[in-house]
Amino acid sequence: MFQRKSKNLLASINIGDARNLDFEDKSADIVLLFGPLYHLVRKKERLKALSEARRVLKPGGLLFAAAISRFTSALDGSLRGFIQDPEFMKIIMQDLKNGQHRNPSNKPEYFTTAFFHHPDELEAEMKQAKFKSVKVYAITGFAWLLPRFKEIWENPSLKTRLMTILDKTELEPSMLGQSDHLLAVGRK
Figure 1 (cartoon, helix red, strand yellow):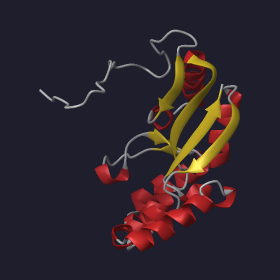
Figure 2 (cartoon, helix red, strand yellow; figure 1 turned 180 degrees about the vertical axis):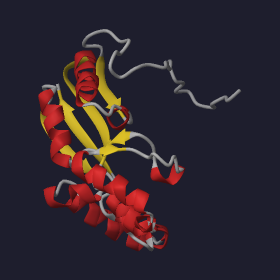
Figure 3 (cartoon, rainbow, N blue to C red; figure 1 turned 120 degrees about the vertical axis):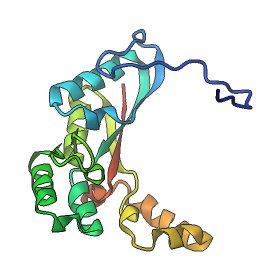
């Protein structure tokens, strides 16, 4: 049994379905959707999850919704040499075409059945679900592609410089798709 030594104990935890939340209307200040949008491969299901998040939010509440970038397989596959595999090239081409990521070979490093968003598409889905003031952020930006990332991250001066660059580029539309994950933030 895991025991935490903290005064701030977790009040509760439940298994649920993002498309049918077991919470009262207007009961939350913030909702986090970290996973459902890439595991719900049909737009109708994603919009249902977004609508459910909106339903449980209080007026003015915030939604933070994570997504995987449409370009992740192409970038990751190129970086890690997966493009040598003709089967992975098929995965990349499908991802780039419509975001429908499939892994028929079941190789764990090729990920699982998922949906990968174009940054504009993520913003559009948030707006379609009636969220206001929507912004899409590049969570990792280009940093996940750096071959010497660990070296940079362990050097306080270089880490600060990298974070400055990422801070200045996380909202740059022309760079959003380089990030492996995206974060959409919207207000009810």
